[in-house]
Image (cartoon, rainbow, N blue to C red; front, side):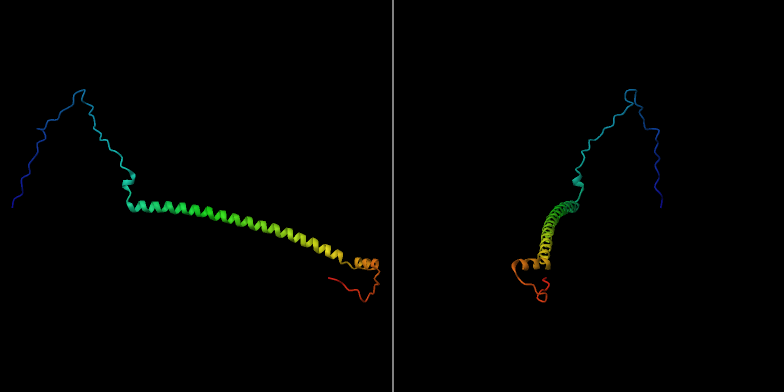
Amino acid sequence: MSLPNKQSVDYSEQQTSIPSGDDRHLEEVQKHNAPQSRLKKVSKLEKIIFASLIVTFLLMAVATIRMTTAVNREEEAISTMQVAQKETQKEIDKLEQEKSELLKSERVKDIAEKAGIELREDNIRKIK
């Protein structure tokens, strides 16, 4: 079996042309590559995932705003009820004080004397 003969290439026969003075600057031909749309490079699954993330973000934002609004309304209702309770408690305290002043034994004795009622110490009792 014999090996194929290698053919030697003689580079001396090839002519190399040296550009003349005006042709020294070779013009490069630039192809105008239109930029491809970035969305064409993205797969459908990636588009669906990205769209679902955006929708989820928007829904979470809306839900957060609604919950904050509901909490604020309830806090306002609670504070209104607390103010009403404090006013009612003040009124109750005022009436309790008035009741204790009206039921003092000295006052009752004075009223009884003015009305002509005879006082008997054994019939007097403390009124609560």
